Length: 393
Image (cartoon, rainbow, N blue to C red; front, side, top):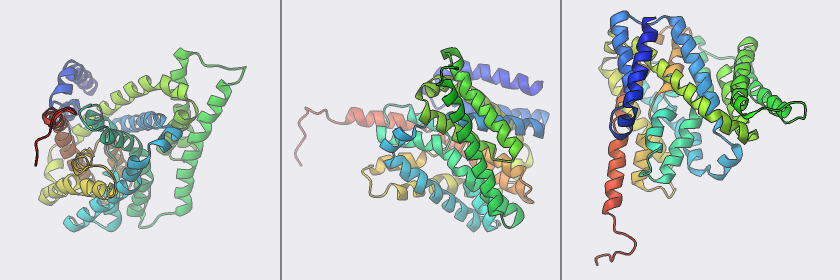
């Protein structure tokens, strides 16, 4: 009950400070993380069952919501830059992060690749802090928005693969294929059947209940995947993409509910995550661990995206901004918790590295969106207007 009281209190404080947070470097994410650190220091870490249930529900909801924002038809029309970031930038981020882990730390190849996969996704909530600022050039905002909305689901198969490799020294291709393929198949089939029934004369969804239809489909997908041994996370993402592509009406109706519910669960997961990072947890990271965390943010992501955006019309300043704003957040938190429960002998070490990188990212990225926006506004104000006569060389 003390944990619930803490969450409710911090939620009210976050609501009261939300307007100020949009105009300053104040971050609600840091607020919940800090509250979790304080709670864990006083009351000890939360129960494992609570952490796991909240995190799984949050990830399922977020993947369903993120997927529902995607329309494959719309995505094809504006795919150029986000496609480079997702199909080239994200794998390179995994590789560069894993390389830093191998150079600095005593990790095996599968363990290093697992850490790289967990830290590859960018967080759509933290990215929205920069995506929602009009002063930032539109191509950068679109790239970051699409990328952060899709890479959670795209990184998950790599996490599953490397986790199996690190835990068992090998992996069963047929088992993984059944788990991944089954999740995707269920995630596509359930929404398709629901939408098809809604379009018949015998059925029909009213507007107030339409938003609940997408949520209901997501719950059915999660339950079926759990019962049949398929991957519920990939199933949820596939269900969201199916809804967003096949039924724009259902996507629009579900958006407010999905975003609110997902945000609430995310903040709860951040509070629980902060409560885990207590006592000797961060001390155990070590100097090399903190250097790794810094390199993962300052080198791996910017270098990977810089390579991905070569031979594009994106100016170097915008490449730097897009490369920097790859915040690690909620998906990495939950994937890190999968590592904890994945049967790895050195799971505590890996979780310390993942936790240190996420913590550093939340503080750094949530504190730089406002300064970057101000810099762009000053640059725009200083630029001559279209009718102004330029001085000669």
